[in-house]
Length: 246
Image (cartoon, rainbow, N blue to C red; front, top):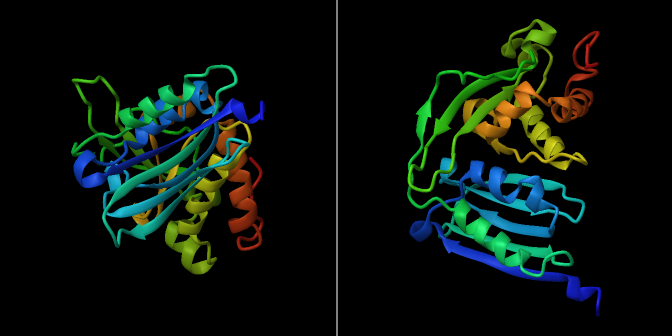
């Protein structure tokens, strides 16, 4: 029983029509930040992201801090955010209240993102990716950064082919490759990143711009580990003399 006393749980509920969707950037930069996610033992539920209000997403986080984010398709019922969370309170008996407060801060009301198709100032310095666009909203009152970046794994520079050649001639499924990339980055041990899949741009990846810029300029190792797994699964064997080593 003493062991069970180290854990507390809470359920976060909210109607999207009343409170709005989750900011993808805030979930990454606040709740999923390394300082906080180390206390989360289990997280499971469905959410609505403010950048994609029409689609329902599931989020699941295991005891090994591995995350799964899936796009479940259009809502067929009332849009709601529902997240159940189990927290380790051994080091801080109030940590569950703080985490619940952080989740509440991640809901952004009825803010509207503005879509910007210019490439961001900092792009991933890797020829395997194409930066698609940014969506941005700066909440001047609360001071949070809600910018997100859409980028896409293509491999066009690596293989010196167009996307059309990769998909039609060699049957590489780039939409599937990007879904796998999201899964691998979120699941890799030691990863503190939080990515979501998107159907935009024929399948791409959504990420906090703040984290995107950090990864682009300082730490690409997690991305490379995920890339190796994607190339092994989706590219190798389809493309002659596939250069899948990173």
